[in-house]
Length: 113
Ligand SMILES: [Zn+2]
Ligand SMILES: [Zn+2]
Image 1 (cartoon, rainbow, N blue to C red):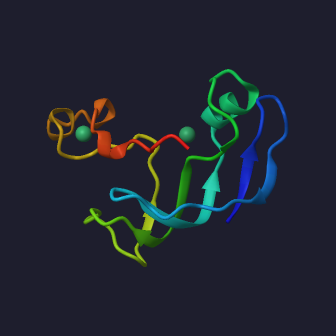
Image 2: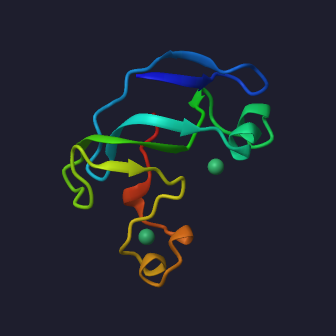
């Protein structure tokens, strides 16, 4: 896929091709149709928010589901979706009491690398 890659804070984004791994059990692969860059992204780009590099800028996207992990039940291939930076599991104590931003569900965390 083509992506706007931030290789180092304070440098211009580099548009290049990336290889994306298959989705894990609780992940969804989305073909991005559109993506914004918000002020949070600018903080990553200028180094105000330290973050491991390289990374792909843009966390507010819309697209079509291409593939789902083996445990995903809420969307299917072909669904139109929007992304959310704050992933939540939907079944931990915080999620079921309406505080999804505090979710501690390990299912929503991506493995290193
Ligand atoms: Zn944002
Ligand atoms: Zn949760």
